[in-house]
Image (cartoon, rainbow, N blue to C red):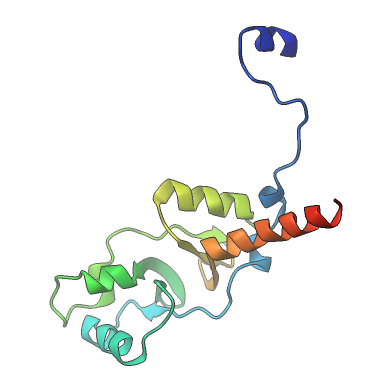
Length: 155
């Protein structure tokens, strides 16, 4: 079968390898120190906090009763054209993309690419949607960097 496909001009790999990112579970790479925002928090308070404290984080999970109900980014907050008395829940429009602790780095990378996002909240499980961490592109790349370093050791 492979020979027939090759004759048709389709490039067939000579060797198959397992996807490294698919083997790495996100709970070991996710950041646990997550800055989240309460859904009931007033926009004016959040904007004031950002101006006063600043942060290197760009994505903030929005929580209601300790459960993820959405995500808001620094850019969303900067570009906002709402009344400052609005709550954060009034601003978020879409439910958040979340992953469970047992998902792989490959699944995280695929969702980031598909939705054009830079980080994904991690939940205990999909039933409780209780926030346990956040995984960013940097975290996924750290897993890949480990594989590269490991490969260089065997050269």
